[in-house]
Length: 258
Image (cartoon, rainbow, N blue to C red; front, side, top):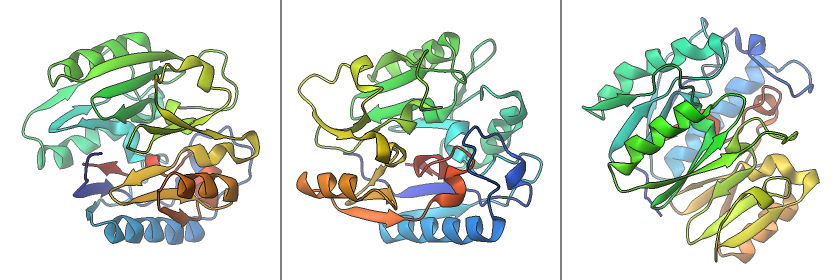
């Protein structure tokens, strides 16, 4: 499992509640979202990461979900082209920050669309979800870039899935050949001999957990999943994500880790 040293985050702006959501969980509280984001950053630092915190971007209400703006694999960074038109400027805004760490950037270009939340990296293999936000042209461009680094890509058809927006809303790679996967997505994945933690329906939001060095960040309220992770020798680090869940966001969405 890759050991991360850096993370890039962007706190929610005062326009946060105006972002895109299908969750129907009510309007988020900005003060509470900022508090939860601060705890998230503390958790990344606790895991040994040096965190670069960008200024809030009120022009783009969804801009706190920085994961969608880029894909970072090994020493390679690819600036995405988000599938929601209102988010296109977010990737462009991330370019200068990424250039401080990665001198050569690749870019997804039209007609391709790609959200980083549809990309699940698993050692020398990457799963790319074909979703409402990521089309085949974008996925194939990313696969071509990854192939230069010897990373194989597997495309996952997500049409007809009703419970998740992005691929990583329903699956996470936790290292040591362990995946957390929701039941609705599992039949579409060829995971071979991997160990699969099946995330039951009433804890589905918890499937978006994140292995960060020696810990696994997990959203609070998923005790059965926490127990399963411990049974696999993993160390859950539990965080309240209620305000981000209201905006279709999860733990992985809030940072770019490398």
